[in-house]
Length: 459
Ligand code: SF4
Image 1: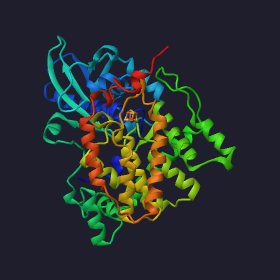
Image 2: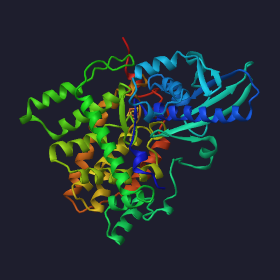
Image 3: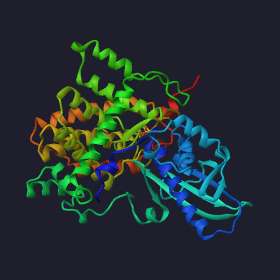
Image 4: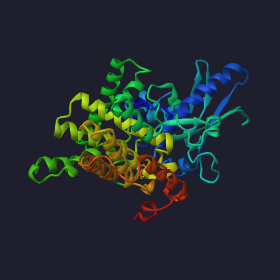
């Protein structure tokens, strides 16, 4: 399947792509759906809207601000239309408004406190992140309903779509593109046969949809948003929202490094940059999904390190993003990037694999070395669970992104010193990640019912 670099890297808001951005997109889709319904059924006088969050969204929805995201989506907002707004003001206004505007002349009542139901008992068999929206009449009778699934990375799927696809993705068949690789074996074969790098093949595929000038502008926008996010995180202090009293640490850590340059290591800088992003994410601010919000620090931190400390050029930055997205696309096609589906190996593991490939490509690695770097980084995340404390994307998520960046950097360096020959292929590793995710207990897939989430005892 073809997944665009511009879909894998999207500017949006924190703290979670599957639990914040996806539900906002779903609520916005239902608003449009409800508009079509009332346009063709104009008789009912009073409308009411209700939303039911299922399973993982119900367990960790409050900590991930899913309820606020639903309210924003029902008021017409989307992740990329809200980033320049005063978030606190918009959330306050929409949360308390009691009505949503379906069309110019039609409103529906909607009470944020009462009309969002957290249903932990009845999960939908298709996916752990189900959301059911209902349009009701004045006596509570059901007029219209639609079910959506937030499938990771801010992508959503409808009931009709998800029933037909085993591993649902918002993507097109790759056969329509000049380099239709769906796995790493095909990718390496095509690279060899056509004497093209991975980023050159990904670029050719992207140019089927956009002229190069526009694509470059969009890639530069993504890079600038990543840079802005890191720099905001490095200059902001305070306590993160959610009730865990998590202190922001990136600013102090960065100052500490700047004042002690002789004793710093690459790992220190990578951690500071990644934590800066994930603190911004936990604060509900602007981030770039890479490929998700929870894992949004790994790719930017690795790229920012290369830019800041190794003077990466804009061409290398674009090559990094294209190569990373080629790997992200393979993972999304053949496994998952969603913590609710396969645990954190799908989020931070995928991000680390993408960053390793991107850095290896920007440093001039061969296609075999890039595939090796991606495999190594993913391999050393296999089995990693998702167990965020209090359902917040803070602990272990913020530090974990630093560790993901460290592994990405290490995998890239190691692969560049070797030939690219290795035992387990990236395809086999992605398959192992998928099977491990299927075997993983429900408790470790973004439900906060196991692991660190239950080790933490609130005083
Ligand atoms: S533990 Fe990993 S998958 Fe789970 S919320 Fe945190 S970053 Fe996302």
